Amino acid sequence: MFALLEGAGFARVKSAVVPRFRFRKPSTQNSAEAFGVKAVMMTGQKPAGGKSQ
Amino acid sequence: MLDVAETQASLEAVLKDEILQMYQEVADHPDAEFHFYHGREAARLFEYDDAWLARAPEGAVASFAGVGNPLLRAAIQPGETVLDLGSGAGLDGIIASWLTGPTGSVIGVDLNPAMCLKAQAHAAAGGTRIECHEARMEDLPLPDASVDVIISNGVINLSFRKRRVVEEMFRVLRPGGRVSITDIVCAKQLSQSIVNDPKLWAS
Image: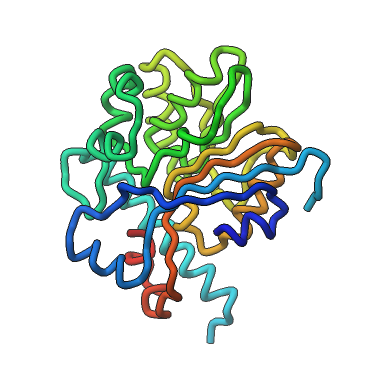
C-alpha cells in the first residue's frame, strides 16, 4: 500500500502500525501473525503543484 | 476457458456479494460476535475520543467495523471537504463532519446502498449531514480535484484493484490534499487458494 501511494504520486507518505489492532479469535490472530498481517495507518499528500495522472 | 480478465471479474462479483453480506451482518446484528472487534469495544481500542463516542448515535457506534482510527492524523479543518471511502454505518464520517463544521462537507462512498442510507440516518441523528454515494472505490463518482481530505478505515484491502483505488484517490484530491488511511496489510504473498476464495478475502 505504501508503494502504491508513492507510485500514484503522493508525497510525504508515512506509515505506522496500529498498535492495538488484533483479531478477536486467537486462532484468527495466530493465522494473521503467520502471514504477517497487521493494521497500519498511512498518510500522504497530493503535491500542491504536482504530477497529474 | 476463462481468460484472466474474465476470471478476475467473476471473482470480483462474488467478492462484492461476500463483502456486502459481511458488513451488512455487522450492521444488522451488532451484538453478534465476529472474528474482528467491532462497535464501541473496537472504537475504544483504537482511541476514539470518549466525547465523540458519547455524542455519536448508538447505531453508528455499535456498527463500527474499522481497523484503526484514521481521524487521529487526518487533521481535518473547518470548511474542508472530506471523502470517507467505505463509509459504512457512518461513525468516521459523522465525526469528520463535526470537525469540518457547517462550512465543510463529508461525502461517503459505500458499496452497499443500505449502508449509505444508514450512514445518512445516523448523521441526521447526530445533528449533521453526510452525502453518501453507492459506488465502487475503484470508480469514484466525484470530479477531479474536488476533495481536501480522504479518510478510509479497513476497506481498501478488500479490493482486487488497489492500484486503481489509489489512483482514484489521487484524482479526486485537490492539489495539497491529503489522505489518512487505516487498513490491513499482509507482509507475505497470499496463496492462490486464499486469493481465489472470496469468503476468506472478504474476512
